[in-house]
Every structure is written in structure tokens, then in C-alpha cells.
Length: 360
Image (cartoon, rainbow, N blue to C red; front, side, top):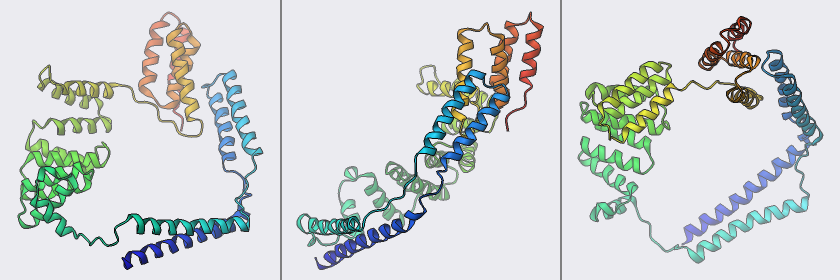
């Protein structure tokens, strides 16, 4: 019991010391609180970007005035809001320090009342032996992983490391699962299923991104087993991410052709094909990025509802060209060409709009 009391007393003293340090540093930084709010510079840059967009023809005069009015309103509001530093009276600081000390005392009292200071320690080795003696099916994934790790120290084998990887994955530990699979591959390098599992584990660790390491592992799985559908599927995703969309679609269509019509995996593959074939969304940066995207999307929607607007089509084509979105630019240009094929003047304006330089 005594060691735990000492521990909680020390923890309480550390909490008080930490609170004192925070209060002192905050009091010293208070005189420096009169600096200009950095958001003011953000709104100034936004006003400049609005003027630049209007000069490029991406914004109508009415939209420009409305956007400038809104940005100006925010700038004035931020300028009028004075930044004040935190300055607590001396009396309040004492209360805060006392509160911090009280938290430690309450925690200590709670442990003495509700805790089990007389409970003996339970070494990990003893717990693992207890788990091994019971039913393995009753163990949680972390407990099963601990049992397997100890067993593999005595008898390392590929299949055992595969089971360990499954337990680690169910314990939400993809890094440990990948380590176990690498040990399994060292023992059985010719097993395609182990390479496939390792690739999927790396994907889980990178939150679905097909990294260079995962791509190499999945490629080895396909080399060992050309029928490995999961590996081929994610390699196709990687191919699309690298810019080869046509090749990715061919790979996905080849996978779909090998599946029976009623296979539920076909729906996922068809969805992936549609995603790859969809035009890439433009990448816009800067404070006015949301505003630009909304304006262009609004113009496109307006033309879908009321397509008889040659000036609007010219503005839409120019917008996509300036944003660097070639697929949407070409699609809008083809649609406008068909609509105004008998109006050479409009066609000339469309060609000039499509040739606009992308925004840097």
C-alpha cells in the first residue's frame, strides 16, 4: 500500500507544479497580447484574390461587388475586435493552484477508498500462462496475440505468424500485423497469400493509400498468384492514382470479367471503374478556394438548367481552363460547340477561352 500512496502523492505534487508553471508562463505572455490579429492579413489577401479573379473574367461585376462586400465586412469586424490577453488577478491564481492540489488529493482519496492497494502484482508471464491454460476461443484479440507471440518464440513457423497477424489486425495494430507477416514471409517466401495479406495490412496502416511499399508487395503477390483479385484491384487503384486512368479501367474490367454475374464484389469493382472514369476535380488553393469552387459549380448548374447562354458557356470554358481542369474544360467546350455550331463568333470566343493559361 505504501508505494502506491507515495506514487499518488508524487502525482498530486506534479499536478500542482504543472499548474503553477502554466499560470506563470501565461502571466508573462499577457503583455505581448496586443499584436495585430493575423486573420487581418488573410482577409486582405482574399480581397486581392477577388480582384484578380474578376480581372481574369471568372467573376461577374455583381458577384465581385458582393464578394468584396462580404470580405470587407469580415475584415472590418476582425479589425474592430480587440485582442486582449489573459490576465488573472492574484487571488484567482491562488484558487487555481488550490484546485489543482485538490484534484490530486481527491484522486488519492478515491484510490484509497475504491482501489485495491493490497492487490498483488500480476506479471505478464503469469497472465499469459493463465490464458494458455484456458480456452483460446474465450480470449480477446490482444490476449491471443500475446499467447501466440510467446509460443512463436519456442516454435517459429509461417502459419503461426499468419495467425498472429490476424490477431494483431483484430487488435487494431496494423503495424504489428505487418511485422508478423514479414516474419511469416521470411519463413515461407513463396506463399502468395502471405504477400497479399501483407499488402492489405500496409494499406490499413496507410488508411487505404497505395504506397510504394504496398505496391511492391502487392505486385509480388500477383507474380506468385496471377489470380489474386485483392492485389490486382489495389494495383489498379494505384495505376489510376499515378495518372494512367485508361490502364486502370482495363485492369478493373479484366477483374470484373473473371467474376460470376452474381458475385457481390462486382458492385465494388463497377463503382471503382466509375470513380476512375469521373473527371478529376480541380485543385484550388488559397483563402478564396471555397468561393471559386462554388461560383464555377453555380455557373455550370445554371447552364444545365438554362443552356441557351453563349456568354455563360464562354465563361465556364474559361473558368475550367484557368483552374487547370482540362477534362471539364473539354467536356464543356464540346457541348458548347455542338450548341453553337452555326455561330462562328461564339465558336471563336469558345476557342480563345479554352486556350486561357492555367492559374499559377
